Amino acid sequence: MKNIFFLLVFILGTTYAVSGQEIIPFPDLSESHIAVYNQTNLIDEKNYSYYNEEYQQALKSFDLEIETIEKQIETISDPDAKDRLRSKKEILINNRLAVLKEADLVEDLNKFY
Image (cartoon, rainbow, N blue to C red; front, side, top):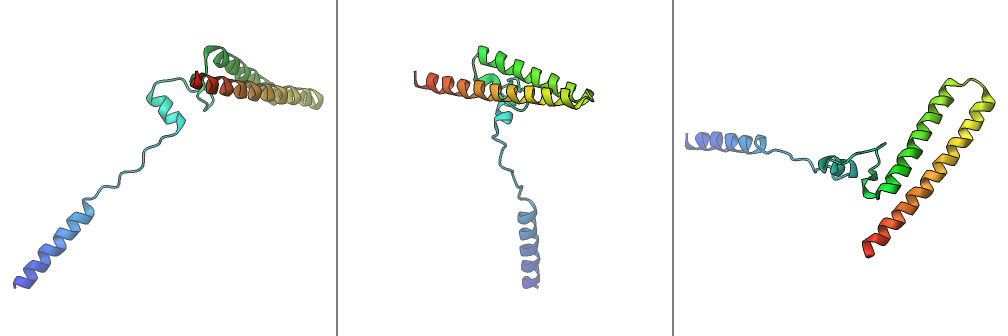
């Protein structure tokens, strides 16, 4: 009888211990999560708040121009006009990448001074 009672308590104890454990997931440490936590504005899944105001404005203007060109491409049916708009979009994207690289370099320099 003692063995049955001991076995019953042992089974209930292990069942409670196993079912009582909670799995806590690793927290999301991505830039967007940190930016939302710090209440900064996210633009196009990018966090431009790391850069100074001039670069933020330049990047925002590039993004707006690229979006307007994308909308124009969707509405225009002339293939030559679409090609011109696509080449203009590629130029804007390259300019935006150049501004991003420059902003990153400026931020790196500001870290050292």
